[in-house]
Length: 133
Image (tube, rainbow, N blue to C red):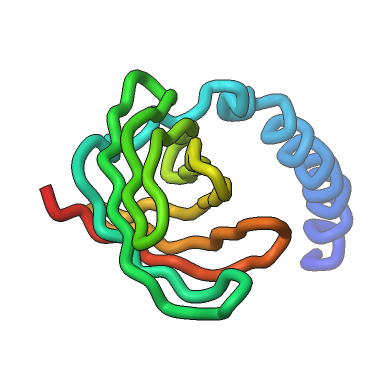
């Protein structure tokens, strides 16, 4: 008698195994095209960088102005200063300086901190930024 119940239950389990994955596959996926709103990076930041052609440690400052995901502002380093242009998508920031020797920065924003990589003339380095105002 127990064998008969199992034999009738087996086709039902097989049918259920086919239906459940098909039903879950038809559920709508989250909208991948809707990007997360960018974090606000407006303010004054102090940047501590390591690397560059001489592999030295330097302190720089940037004043960032944000409109939507577009960034502008001012850069001041030990040897040059000038404008900034860039973007922010979610927590990912990318900007470059408008200076004689262009510096390219990219990183991840977490609150009042940024960590990432930077480079100039193909020579990479690392950097950390802290919002001071």
